[in-house]
Length: 151
Image (cartoon, rainbow, N blue to C red; front, side, top):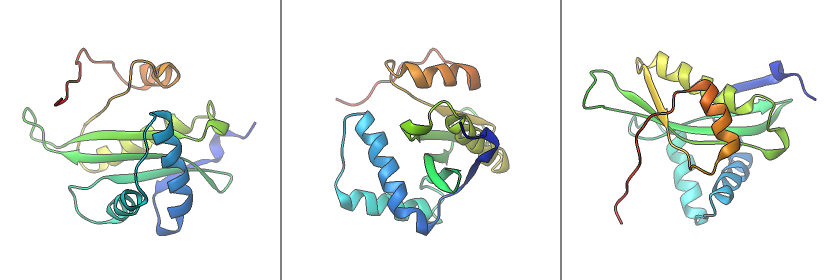
């Protein structure tokens, strides 16, 4: 087993395009969805851009290999002066699950939020995502909100 201290979390770089695509495909596969190649290209470019309305990305490296990703963004909140941070996507390669990758990525988002002056970080998951929810129950607080969407 690899030492957990070897996990490095850092911002996404241009050179990460191929492996980021593989990881994001794994994430989308888990949720039984797929997207056209054009969407990958647009999203990757947005992740590297400087538009504050776009998502940012952190990746996790283990022994020099990308093994996880998280996408997050900052937005205004009607009840707070400060922005809040929404963590949208979180994925760790199945081969390294249980090695602290998810926790390291969430803590990386927490640090980015702190640096941006956004004390609140939130995310959603599906109720059947039992493995991830074990981590979320340790690192966050479950809220009573239920998500609704336009039909």
